[in-house]
Length: 341
Image 1 (tube, helix red, strand yellow):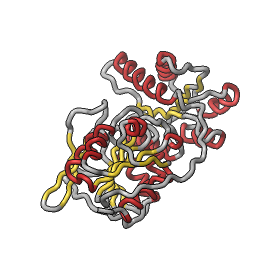
Image 2 (cartoon, one colour; image 1 turned 90 degrees about the vertical axis):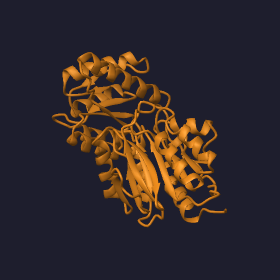
Image 3 (cartoon, rainbow, N blue to C red; image 1 turned 45 degrees about the horizontal axis):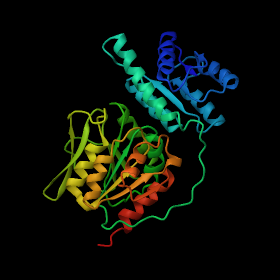
Image 4 (cartoon, rainbow, N blue to C red; image 1 turned 60 degrees about the vertical axis):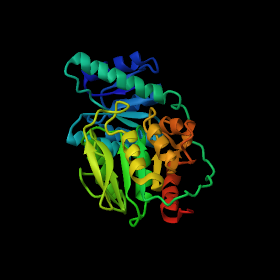
């Protein structure tokens, strides 16, 4: 079901979904109240929901739907504005599956192609898992890293903000290492993500600035639209933001960060690969593992899209998989009690 108050944008979304080959639109709605009525009638497997609508807005609709079905895939559609970014991150906090930003193509045709490509990729990734229901898993045995990590790098994409909302607030205020996060998101959205996580967490959370010294007990979020890498100088480590070409169609890219962690920290790095489409992160983790780093992946049962963790797992660069709720304890165990050599 496509929910949007703009008739023109509803038509564009319907066209994009139907053209994907992975889903078809069964009905549409112009506001949240109408969408709730039609949800009871059609029981769709997935929804696209405009963030800003009259009568009942997207956030209110999202909360109502989440009360009915906690894992129904809901794609929120947002404008690339400061207000849109804040409301979109709030939607992710409330359980939205992913954010679709309204296309910014130079021409209507370019916008249409941009949206088609984005919807096809999302629907292809979500199609196999849309009917699934989470099952409880036993707590895995956590391996102890050979060397105690001095930094944690986290990579995530689709579903990542939800996973980060579980992981980051569970980290202690005095975590003895810095944590660097690459989340695939547009500019402005990452600042709102950092603000949201900071409100919920004891540990300090910021959107990282170019040239900033990386300190323990701080989570650094890479800004949308810029790559993040680290640079060591005079026994200190600093963040560097660059405008190098995108990797895997992403900037920031997880591989870009992980490569620099491997080169700078070698065996004293920990890599965490979370939910997301594609394979960004795997090549960087290969280099980290070559230097003896410790790697934890998010398990399939707790992923929105088991893509990036699966690629890393199949490449043999993951030491252990855990759920999102078990990830913070795994990080704490590694950086506070790791070290056998």
